[in-house]
Image (cartoon, rainbow, N blue to C red):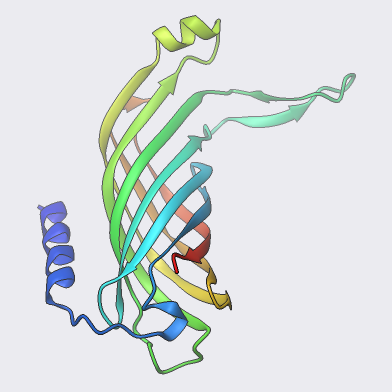
Length: 202
């Protein structure tokens, strides 16, 4: 029910807002970029796209991949060879598509090169569980994939560093559901931090 309400909200925002967009922090310009992401349960990379839909609202789309870190997983260094390796390792990866809304409440009220925002996004995900040991072919044949949904909500700020480039810092809560017990858990959630580097299309 909550997912339906969120989708309904996003649809109404897109269709009900004015077509006039503000040039503050480049809100009137579509942009794309790369994002570095770290969370309580892992880290990864993503590509994103932002499109203005009104004076204070932007449509946000993202495709991200993350490597999940186990609760007991850690990196140790061999005393004799100084070779680093992981103990209690498991190979678990996430591929997720997100669609959401960025809301800039202070457009026109503060400096033009700085704009705080809140953001919520939701989308489907694939959780890919690869066997930790064995030959490559055996790992491929025994890989399990689980499909479900997740969402991200939080706050951030856009900083314009050049006329066509922005840096965005975001901190929030990331929640990933799983369709089954995967590596002892039925969900992966926690604090997430994003550092996004954007480039205007024009």
